Amino acid sequence: MSADAMTGMPLSAAGLAEPTVGRLLTSWQPDVPALLLVAVLGGLYGWGVLRLRRRGRSWPVARLAAFVLLGLGALVVATMSALAVYDHVLFWPAAVQNVLLDLLAPLGLALGDPLRLAVDALPRARADRVRRAVTGRVVRVLTFPLVSTALVLTTELVVYFTPYFATALRVSWLHELMYLHLLAAGCLFVVPVLTREQTLPAWCTHPVRAALVFLDGLVDAVPGVVVMTHGTLIAGAWYLHHAPAWAPDVRHDQQIGGGAMLSIAELVALPFLLAVLAQWARAERLQNAALDRRLDGEQSALAVATAGGSAVATAGNPPAPEPADPSSPERVRPWWETEDNEVAARIRRHRDNP
Image 1 (cartoon, rainbow, N blue to C red):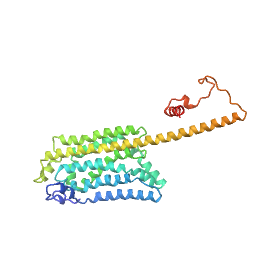
Image 2: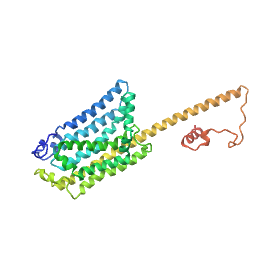
Image 3: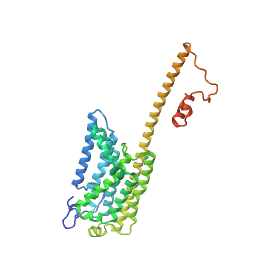
Image 4: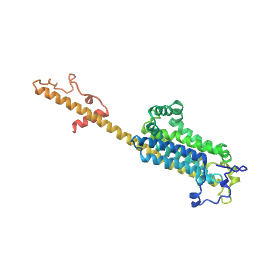
């Protein structure tokens, strides 16, 4: 993003017309670092999908669409759309930019399940290295649910309530670094929660993940509320100096930005929670199917053993008499009659109601 040497503003921001719906939809400007990041992420993901297809395996179209349209799409919109065109003269486009990078883009990238794709597409040795990398000590600390949630909240508060944001408006390379910082902070929480690779602690079961996502939705609302109600202007000197004649009052502009942050945060929280609940339901179906297969195998083995005993008795070897009392200690009872757990209960129900 080129900048004016005197003011630090993008050249495209000079003489901007008042934003209308049409201008917001049609105003775009290139951002070379963001384009390179999109190209790298999209190229690696596409390579993984093609590699799987060459092996005769498929990759869900929904995951591909989420990664490209929601993940990379949000990244493009945040850094190259009208939000980037107007972010140096109005606060609210910059606020929307940042929340898209911090919340929506990570959600889209995570729904694409890039870690599972990498493990499936790479040769075994490289896949093992990927697993070791994402389960290493440093990554585990950064992605620990409470730590990553705190990092997301801290990142947004540091951006707005330190000289970070005001300086980034003047220095183009720091502005690009801020984009990357927000994206990385969001990914640290979202990607581990939604990935099918086991990168979180064992106690982070699906019910726990759903609770963490609900908590994260509440935490993500905090920056928007604080920005909207904060008495001091954020980067106020910059926006007071560079606001065009048609711009709203700077304080009102900040309130609009905080409200937009709050609204987007709550809108993103809902599909995030639904995605976790869908994974939970799928895991339950798979577990029940595996349990049914196990029960069927055990009952088949029991039927074979019973049939074998009947055949021996028919050949002239009468079976040993059973004790009259089923609770007699001399009788060896099957484990599903003595144990009190879900599997045993299901076997007993199946036996009593064939």
